[in-house]
Length: 171
Image 1 (cartoon, rainbow, N blue to C red):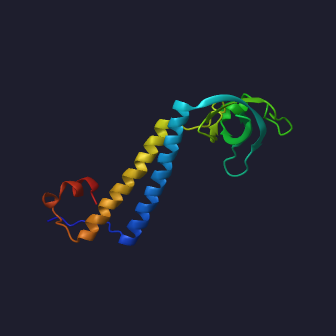
Image 2: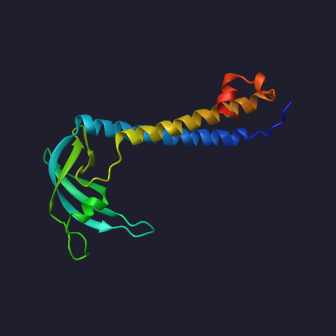
Image 3: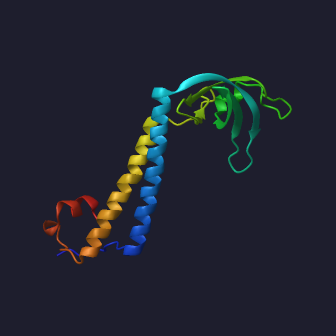
């Protein structure tokens, strides 16, 4: 009979890990729904750039703040700017600014606070968002199955004595 080391995690740690993974999955799912609604029901209007700035830190990024009007109300938004957009605009020196420049903005008419400027180009695609959410949800399910199997007690050590779930998880 082959002996193998089993990776065993405590039930409390499993619960915290599962809850954390489910929370990240839930937030990712909410973001995916917002992205889908923006793609399917988004309305485009002309806004204007309020300010641009370069964040400081290890990986500096450009950001753009913008305003747009809808039904007589002015809404504000902020977005990360892609390198391509930055190099195509006169924002390369700190003295130059885009304040007042026109900017196309997409928003949800049901909630204009959910908005983004598509021309700035720093948004992630819907497919990537979906895959990342699915990956975190899958990890939560695998950790949950592992925790249940560990709580069940000892299992047969031979490959023939394993169930299908135990073979898939492989712990």
